[in-house]
Amino acid sequence: MYYDSTYFLILIGLGISLLAQQGVTAAFRKYSQVQVSSGLTGAQAAVRFLQMNGIHDVTVMRTSGSLTDNYNSSNKTLNLSEQVCQVPSVAAVSIAAHECGHALQDAEGYSPLRLRSILVPVATIGSRFSWLLFFIGLAMGYLNLAKIGIYLFLGVLAFQLVTLPVEFDASRRGLRMLTECGVLTEEEMPGARKVLRSAALTYVAAVLASLLQLARFVLILGGGRRRRS
Image 1 (tube, one colour):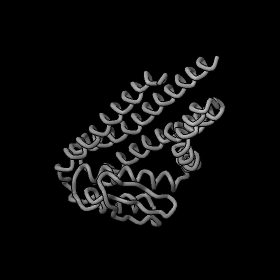
Image 2 (cartoon, one colour):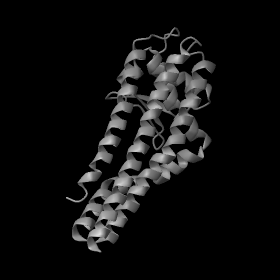
Image 3 (cartoon, helix red, strand yellow):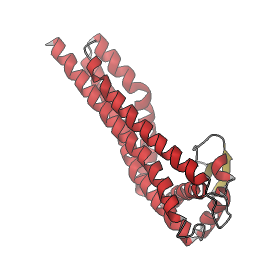
């Protein structure tokens, strides 16, 4: 098919994403073996972070899976995976601090977090239908339909771009809490920075992969126009 040559963009994006994921997995595995001198587990550290920031309406809960930690603003729950919730390691308390950073953002009405919440339905629709509309439009010669697919994909990209400052800010807040709340010593902080930095890079990789996919869509659409002319 005429658009086969653009597959290399997907492969580059996939490679970037895999490298970023391997990086966060390796950092988390390494610093999961380093116990914190404070002896606090991720869940215990999270409770301390929330209390010391005056947040009393958030419940710390355990969730299944690995690196599935998240903060849910709709039901005010901070969900920690088993490797974070019950383990007194540098990696565990670092991830817990990051998620508490999101809780603090929510409590303060952090604007990028609000914007990301608004963009959630846009990103959901775009991720489900952008590819479908694009390739159906291309196959049937309805280039305007293919354009709609691109516009929907732009919604996904917008969500990912807004996510970057949200995640970086949560890590910044988390690192500050780790020292201010006495959970990590100065000697333990470099490990926390490496864990959170590697996690942040996965979001950067997602944006880069989406930009490459957008470039692919544009190249394919341009090829479709040339074939019709």
